[in-house]
Amino acid sequence: MFIGEYEHTLDEKKRVSLPKAFRAALGKKMVMTRGLDNCLFVYPQKSWEKVAGKLSELSFAQADTRGFNRFILSGAAEVAPDGAGRILIPEHQKQFAGLKKTVVFAGVSDRVEVWDLDAWKSYKAKIERQADSMAETLGKIGAL
Image 1 (cartoon, rainbow, N blue to C red):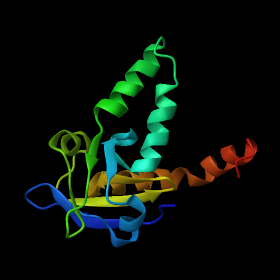
Image 2: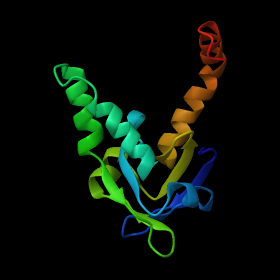
Image 3: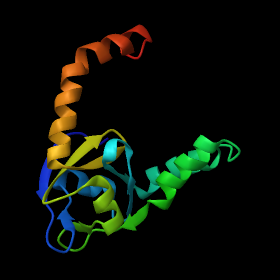
């Protein structure tokens, strides 16, 4: 399980060090793809295979399914850390997430999210303001 948040700096070659807390669980091969809310999702290879498998089971007759599959799958790239624990973020993903100099790695259960620092701060502030009402809604449906 991935938890916590860590700030790291992108170098001029679009490489960034993975947080040590996440390296072992992510493994030697991982998949990074466009995520929701303009961040990137990073999955260990086995978790990615489960996600991709679930997506492939959905009916391609539905426009939303086709669109979401294209969004997630075509935006994906296999990445592997180098000897220093850095990964290269593909240019299309860097642009999608608006990554500048400092990025945040956020552990979110089965995946790691990669955010631009300013976007993360803005998103986190919004979510923190809504936490009580979200908890109430989740409580009503029995999720909490």
